[in-house]
Amino acid sequence: MSLDVAYAQELAAHDPEIEDINAEAFGPGRFARAAYKIREGGPHRRDLSFVGLVDGKVVASVRMTPIAAGGATALLLGPLAVRPAYKNLGIGKKLVAIALEAAGKDGWGLVILVGDAPYYAPLGFDVVVPIGQLIMPRPVDPRRLLAAQLKPGALAGFAGEVGHAGAAAASGPVERKRLKAAE
Image (cartoon, rainbow, N blue to C red; front, side, top):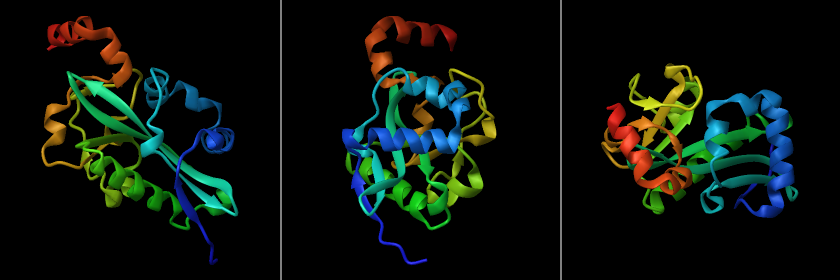
């Protein structure tokens, strides 16, 4: 199938289509996931989030959300979703590549996600986060907590309780103090 896919930065106008794609891909269970809980803490970065368009319609999307742990920051990739009729055409992989490149250009050193290593490892998420290094807000299979280090060694400085970077900044010294007390 030869398909003309345009890739673009996400715009607010894409939100209804992206919500439909995510509902189709993940169903109502998505609201119970750890990554969703983090994303509830604040906005994602539209300038680092992208869509795949066919004939002007969104057929796939990927989002990046700033996260914090132990005083350090990173990005959380996801959700990545592709409409069923457009799966297995490389659209999702291309979106991940575009998002990682944009994150690197923006100065980010680390991107985390919860996903399947066989799919994501070839895309740069080739490190399984060591068990216990990160504490997610809801249960996560530790084998699915993956990292793409855009700067060598970036994962080493990212440890502790994971939350939205905006929420962590808003909680300020109290949050940092609580994290230090848990060490």
